[in-house]
Image (cartoon, rainbow, N blue to C red; front, side, top):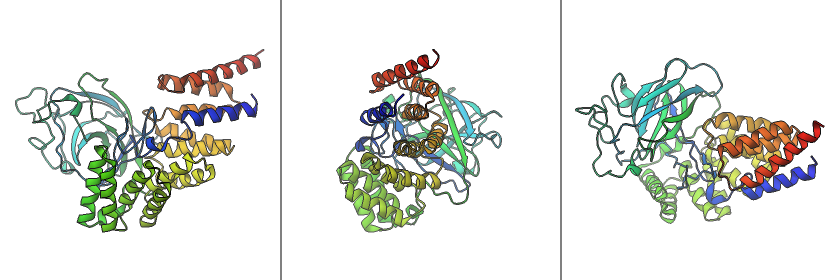
Length: 422
């Protein structure tokens, strides 16, 4: 296969949105993570749905980062039994430290739901407290608290929630995660989950932090004065409701009240970038970095702007920093890094990063990883491997807008393989 054909493939990928993503669909993400350290801190990462890079501003398959803040809104209580199953595993492939607690967190209130077996597998019924120990981090008994089911007189272990009759609002602002001292956990958003949904939630990864790593939560969030935090939280609430102008105004108030508020600068930058105010957005993200150099999110956000503008070396440099600060919470950072190196014709570096992206994306939130992996292998003339990953992409994301193009690529790879066997 000629280099010119590979260039055309890359151009097609850009047009399809794999490498150069629309800015309006990039901010924030679905793959949020939560801290499981003894301090009990909670963070949120960035992810994406199957249609593109996720957004903390309301796109499908996304969540808004909580940046260590807690909402005062109570979480809905489940009205029918909801069963969940899955697996907890270490991100580096090592063995779990022992049975791990699986917990539900709603609006900052955590509730132990069950435990894994020695192999990390779990099956739980949300809200069923039988045989589940609630420790001090859960605030003692959860019965009767807002957003938590009551098991009294209810064989299913599930209560009711006043004013939440619609199943679409069940488990709003709730996530499922693992808890183990000294580890951070990926989170699975539970919003909209219904009793008859597939109970298998996939794999939840745990990560042990190392010295020098940054955080999904800026330390400046904890240092911000009350008025700044109040404006920031109002901004998040407006963003959840897709009220972008109001959210932007509140974030501006937050940084005016506390100029070192890194999380607020980052959220303001997202609003500005979504409005195509890229110069303003860059300034806000740089203010976030200046306020907290170990806060990974603004590096990733700057890389998205550079990615849109196809400044591949800048993308590579920014995502290299982001992945060093946080090698766990942002699989898309490795995806962007791989795309940058692919376009710079640095195949080995591209393959190394796409492998990391694939390892962290245990629930296939970024099907583009498989597509890019196939193109990288084609660049190495490994057409059998390339075809395998393109088939995987189509299997994970059969409704992809570029499915026809990918099938054409796959046919060409198969033709090359057939010619090589003649």
